Length: 195
Image (cartoon, rainbow, N blue to C red; front, side, top):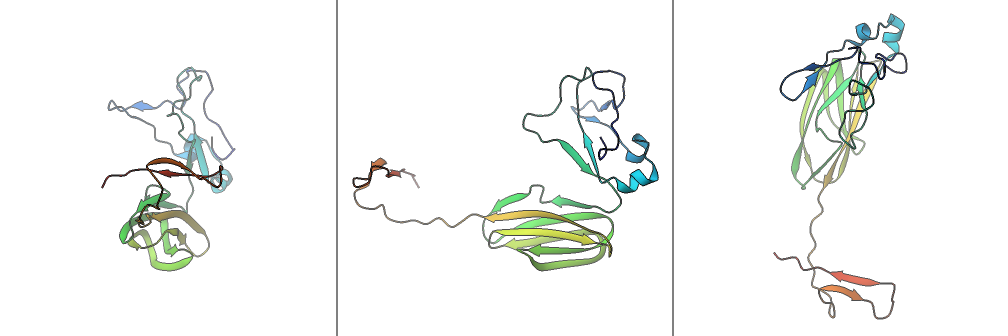
């Protein structure tokens, strides 16, 4: 389906519309040029920003995606930002480690990287952006592109693993569940973790 404009295919009918090619390596593929595949007018092309896909078996009664997998939506249009790295919206790392950031734009643009709402890097008049950002604290990033009239952005986060605090076990506590003698709604759980 393209942005609520058009749907291609006939549910439950094995008529070959939208059929994918078996690559004989465990994968299947299809090449779609949205304007051609959906027979879009020039006005529809200029208004379309996303394309959704559903994969079903030939009879149309079984959706073919892994359990828990989200629906498939793809950005389309002339001005887009593609975040290649990091590949996940949240990355967990140790303080002082670097977070590789790599992105491309569909046309020449100005890139701005913000860390916790502060500009930390820019790249002017390019289609590629690369940065190895040293993360010392949990940080929310926003990578923006602009061509002077349009702006696109992607947000991602780096979570720093907190330092482990070691302290002596309070007197009177033993391995296992320790019930509070003065408040029966409280208990302390002591776990033994070998070094």
